[in-house]
Length: 230
Figure 1 (cartoon, rainbow, N blue to C red):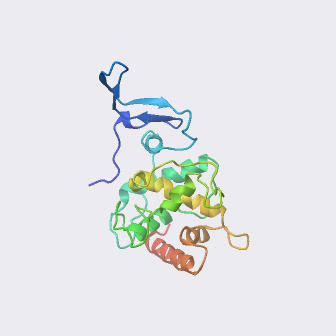
Figure 2 (cartoon, rainbow, N blue to C red):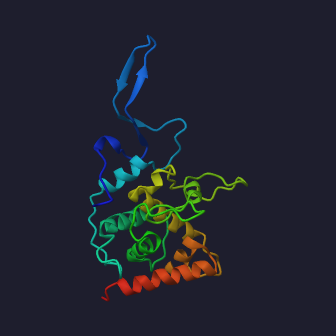
Figure 3 (cartoon, rainbow, N blue to C red):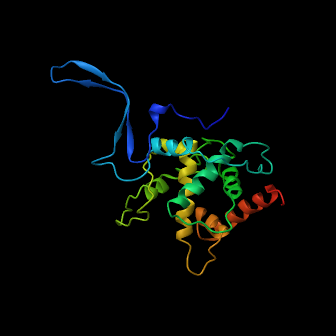
């Protein structure tokens, strides 16, 4: 069964707007009336950034067509349904001015998903971890990508934000949008004495350290076994 499901038109809207869910309203007279779901322009407390309804809108209303990526070695045709989403979100973040290494291949991200979750949208939660979804995005990453300050008041991401809940991050489309945005953030954080390439960026997705190097090696080894030689 496909994990990526197109929401009803009433459940999605372009950036700058949000969906007001259907709800019951009590009038001054005490009469209860039902308010149908509708779209409303963002204002007040809603900060600039993408909500889940915007994330789905951008993908499902995109006119661009993407070719299928190669299958990941050992997984057969698993993950094929995510090929377009992976490529779309890389393109989208680039269109917003975010940078990725020149040697990044979308198939590398597909290999990451295979490593992180075996293409399961909601794999078992690792003990003591908040990492969830296809790309195992943590609650801390949701906070960072939402532009929230840490305990010292420092804000890592100040633009191209995503405002999603801990529950919404499990949604496959949301998770890929988060994971690809996080990769761009990690790329921007590569230390000056390190190579600005895909290997180092992938390493940073785990950590810029020994554990990250082993992680990147696993990903790129899986990638090399999977890609068809041109």
